[in-house]
Length: 312
Ligand SMILES: Nc1ncnc2c1ncn2[C@@H]1O[C@H](COP(=O)(O)OP(=O)(O)OP(=O)(O)O)[C@@H](O)[C@H]1O
Ligand code: SF4
Ligand SMILES: [Mg+2]
Image 1 (cartoon, rainbow, N blue to C red):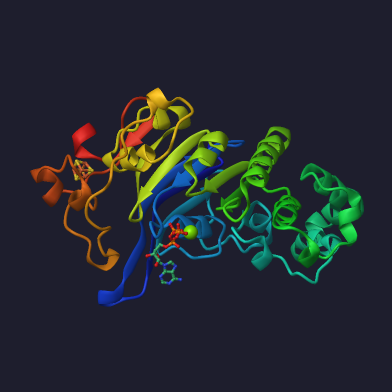
Image 2 (cartoon, rainbow, N blue to C red):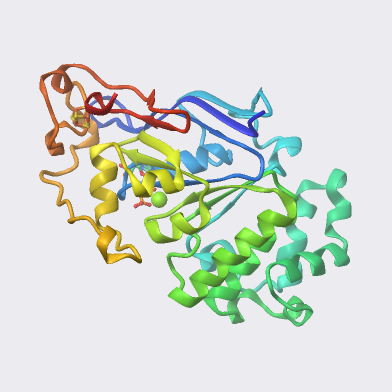
């Protein structure tokens, strides 16, 4: 059974002529212990989707099911709040710089009150700190005194304190330099091996997504246009947008590097989307049907779905 199922999820901001449909009917599933990468250009709706899944933002419509139970709008309830956590791009903005690490890590259990009070024991705090690769000496340090990489480890440790089933990681390594980024990715994989937590890993950095994700969802203008097992997606992308996105990523084998596809045209204004496929003005495969009908995600083989008339 899936840990998480998202069905026909929509989120709009603003009203009338200014309404921005940020997420437009997303369906996805996540299994226990699985990492789903979420990629797509800036403004396509990745953060908005992640925020709805952790309950920081209410959907306009649609369902968010945990273990088959619809929790949309109820994630603030204590019994659900501990199950999903979010880690943000800039740890310095999500951690209080004056708080000692020990206070930061005891906070989640204090907020969740009685039922998980045991989790705030100093032994479990030390154990979680060890899990993120920091020694006990960090307990008395203030977050503001730590490096960016150490702060992100503390932010991950804080997310782990409530023993969540799912962590949404929104660009968790983009503000870190390459070597620290790599260590954080290894750390996240080790944590997942030891406790089977699931990750929704949002990133612009496709090489990092390839390293950590079991499957990858590609988003364009609020919709998932392709979702596939990771190696399959990188080796043989199907949707014209996925092809363009991946053509910019260098591979380790120069013979496999494909020519970079430069997308023509601009991303349409989300308040004035065209009828039909929203990728039509940038697509080299566009044909008549794309101007009048909207494609929907369809199975292409057992582990891939694509939303494009040309490949269905
Ligand atoms: N609070 C808000 N009020 C109004 N519009 C918003 C709000 N949050 C997001 N949007 C709009 O919704 C769309 C999706 O934004 P979102 O931040 O989810 O994109 P993203 O894929 O995370 O982008 P990035 O890669 O830059 O982080 C954008 O058009 C954005 O301007
Ligand atoms: S449906 Fe048509 S316009 Fe849209 S991506 Fe496919 S071929 Fe291109
Ligand atoms: Mg974002």
